Image 1 (cartoon, rainbow, N blue to C red):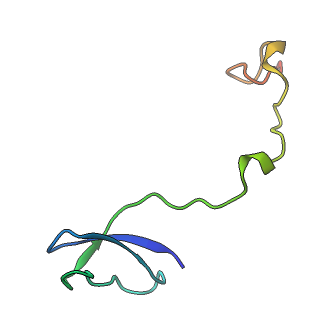
Image 2 (image 1 turned 180 degrees about the horizontal axis):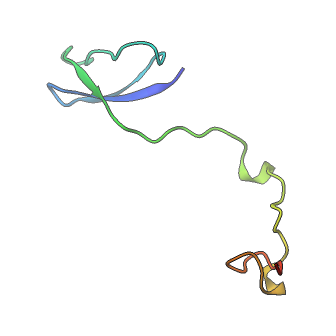
Length: 76
């Protein structure tokens, strides 16, 4: 279930609530007033970087040249 960040329009209390996307916004837990939804960064879930396959351009940079910034070592 997603979490949402809110701030009370009356007392400015910030809080986080967990509810279905189809549910309406909750009231302020302190004063019961109307709240506004805050913009927050999305949670990113996935595998750790160590579990990903080696990138396509994985040649050592010491070979020189390649792929735009020259970091991969491929000569295109």
